[in-house]
Image (cartoon, rainbow, N blue to C red; front, side, top):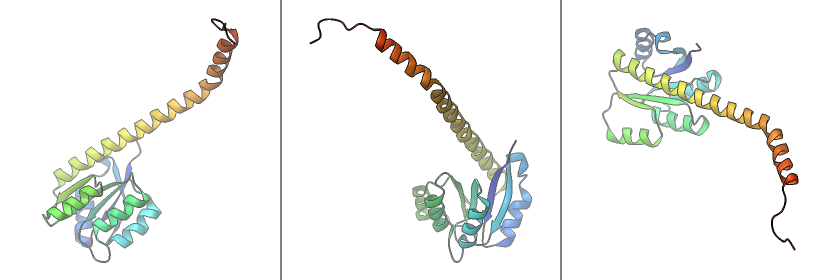
Length: 167
């Protein structure tokens, strides 16, 4: 089983290290491929490491989590984004919803809640991969069947009689 890739973004190093340390990443189907202290740093790492999920704080220097989410949506529309915030501010949540953020959680982040969220995200990613695989199989079967369908159609067209009087 391949593990999904995740990057953590928070301006507080202790918060990043604590989250990395406290979660059993492999048990929930992820591997932490990197971390960043702000949105600008995160964007560079996202381009280089191509994670499936970005877990980011909302308020950071240089580029905040919502601006980061906006840039991620522009470049990687299917990437999952989890925002965590120490601010119970409706405007932040509303903007996050508009950016199609996967989850929005309030700090302090507890291990059980984050683990449950990661399991849900993993399940969604598994479903998306399965759907892509099914579409790909359907496309391959269609392409393989096309010559047979074409021959069958032409045989029926040539072999059929035209009813009635045709001018």
